[in-house]
Length: 345
Ligand code: WQD
Image (tube, rainbow, N blue to C red):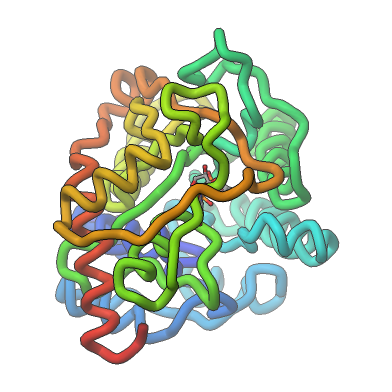
């Protein structure tokens, strides 16, 4: 029988791509989203890509009563993937309580409801932000690399969420959990039907790059060229969002169908560090589009360099990032072109 997965934040960037991969793998999906940073039309896009319309419930996971009505309406939920969260680092500094409420209350509500409704496992969207700036001899980071004090309330919510899940499992709760620590997810579905839709001026590198290439932004600033890296610009591990989505399918299979440990952590990255300058060059080479860019002062709070050791995900989860950086960057550009064709951006 088909298994049913509740995907919170399923109309968002990573949630929508993961819903597509779950449906392609034969799961039923119920999306719960409050549309605070996404559009209901994404559900149409998922249907267009997969031929299957996921159930959609317009619910805020912080509203426990409303959330419980979803569990009663769909009594056969086997697993949860919890994406729904506020995720802007700068905003979290200005509105910490909003972040603590949104990101912590929602998780506690889900964990409380899981055993009541017989839900076996949860996959939690964590982040490489928990590693902060690792010491040089800890690069690439493994899952055992020490977690550093968070740099922002947002980062702190990810750490606290991990601890809440760990404490709950250690208390003997009858649920399993996987923490996926994402590195930098980029790109868009090859169909160009779903993709990344930042509100306002993008904070993240790739939407800023594609919007600059499209002429929406005048110039990309590369923040800092005096870091202790080969070309002086920061290094990240950029992972294709569709590859990342597939890691969730593997993690869900592992939680529901194997007797794996009750709590497991996996880094989800490519295992390769790429500098900002290398990324800009790769974008130009992959798309043939010239980018107007200039070096600018460092952005405060930026990590100098971090990338993943992915051995555990490769060997234990049986998952590997497969898509080249060039194909990934082309997908991001094709999505931007599609947004322009549709008159959106
Ligand atoms: C990447 C690199 C910038 C914009 C974000 C989240 C973080 C985590 C991962 C979820 C950096 C440089 C950027 C620009 C630039 N996500 N840059 N010019 O900072 O690694 O982290 O994703 O938990 O919480 O904040 O990603 O895309 O903002 O930056 O030079 O206009 O690009 O300095 O080196 P970051 P990013």
